[in-house]
Each structure stands twice: as C-alpha cells, then as structure tokens.
Image 1 (cartoon, rainbow, N blue to C red):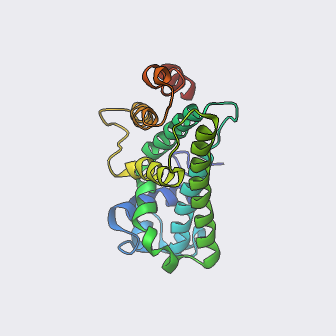
Image 2 (image 1 turned 90 degrees about the horizontal axis):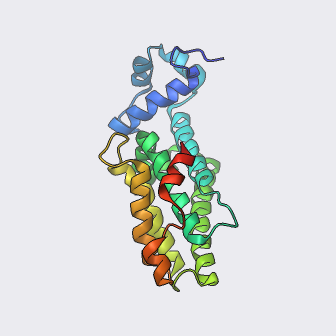
Length: 218
C-alpha cells in the first residue's frame, strides 16, 4: 500500500525528489539534508530508506538503464525500419516522461566509478552494451535482408544512441512537438538514408501508419 498522498511509496517519493535535486544541483552539490528537507522528512528517516546518497544515485541509474533495455524489445516479424521506429518512439516517450532521470544519468556518467561499487558499474556497463548491440543487430538485420543499404552498423548504432538518448537536453513534455511526433521525424530522417527501395523510402519509411502507432501507445 502507498504511504504517501500522491500514490507513491515513501521510497519512490525519495527517489523522485532526489532525482530532481541531482538534475538541478548535481550529485556532488546535493546533500542528504537537502533530500530530507525537500521531501519533508528528517535525515534519519531518509537513511532508513537509503543508507547512502550513492545508493540513491545507483537506483536512478539502474532504473534508467533497465528502462532503456526494456524499450528496445522488438517483434522478430517486424521489418528493420519498423523496429527502429518503435525503438525511437518508446525511448523518446520514456525520456519525456522523466527528463530529470535522463539528465542525471548523463551528467554523472563520467564519475560513476567514484560513487558505485565495481559490481554496480559492471551492471550499468552491461546494460549499455546491450542497448548498443541491440540497435547494431537490427541495422545488420536490415542490411542482410536487403532492406537497408550497406553501412557501418557500429558507427550508425552509436550515432543513433546519441541522437535518441541525448534528446533529454531539449525534449520537454509540454513542448511544441510531442515525443511521438519527434520520434517520427527522427526515424524518418534516419531511415530515408538507409532504405534501399525508392518507393518505400519515399512513401512509407516507418513501415506503419504513425497515427495508428500513437493510438496504440496511448
């Protein structure tokens, strides 16, 4: 049962508040006292849920990493272009729903070896590798089937990851374009550079009706 009025468990509320503080002030610039004050608890209660500040940060990282891997599940019967579009839509919608979490992930990335245990770092790196390999493998599948032009799938996968996950810097839930609309724009631009068939490239680069996809996602 939830123990807060907003429907979150107390631990979830602490994580949400800490994420916002870390995004705004940085991990190093946020004290456990700040988290306790922001959530309206004493510090001893905060330590009951999280024994250290680094454990809060690791929870943020683990949640973000697990979400990203989960967003890359795909239907093996779908075309490579459909799969890439669905990846992009799920990733951008997820980032738009929690921009602060993504910001913390990338802001603190250079320093996690200082804050996390070797096992924690290994878990995060494994998830990052899974994301890269999954995207690369879909591109390779498109090349092998003749759907895509031959290209360096390693470079393209890295570029794709930067393009999608880096959107936290400017993507806003209440912005001029929805995350779904931006996903369609991104995917169309990328896929029109990959698809071999001129008719498909011009008429249906995403492989699906975007309006239908948005309805299904709601």
